[in-house]
Length: 334
Ligand code: SF4
Image (tube, rainbow, N blue to C red):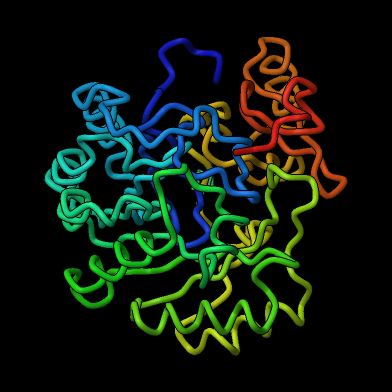
């Protein structure tokens, strides 16, 4: 039951991932601690918006949970162990030790999903080099669009961001750098914007380019995915390495099982879910049990329901969505 006070804090899943199959997630920072405040972020506004690296959670506590969860899963297969934070995971100052120790604990490949904003630091590049795959974000090919989409901390610049990813690309073995591009209608789906982005990506030379769409609970109400023509334009301009990541609706068809011990709060702290998708996540639960779980967690103030695209999404309590949390409706977002 998800209200278990001993429920995991740092490790969640395994959950079906759009890119990484059945993935055990590791979180390294409190929700929603980030140095960007992306308009499409599914976890609400960044609070705090910070660029400070420190040991947000004790390394030993994280690793104790990883060991326990791996032991509980055995021999249940997972495809990946993924560092995917409810903010920016590389803000954790000991991320390198965590990656190396997780590699030692498991034979499964380790991925790090990051906005890539700290790759300009040689220390961070060294820390992430131990991962099997690193997935940084690059949504824009120019400084203005970068600021408008990602709304970074004032210490961070577009030039620095691109230089960091380029430097990392030069030190990673082939096959290990996958760039994520979130397409947002009216921002980076025009031909000029895509051509600028393509030029930067060509210079970086990633192994794969993953196009994603803001289909899951974007923080800003006006954010929309591009139409079919916009997606096709992106694929054609960004080239053969670019492919569209399957939408969450396709996850049910992958045959991956639900979490071993479903902890809805742990999952939605990192991945908001459509209310309608709970049935496929907890496939062996009757509807009455799912409804009771949601009602209990709402009553306990552990989750909230946020509407986007006319649909209800289950998200963690405390995340900040304008036009939903009245107190932040007037924030500028940066
Ligand atoms: S999408 Fe990622 S990088 Fe952007 S604000 Fe959210 S957590 Fe930070």
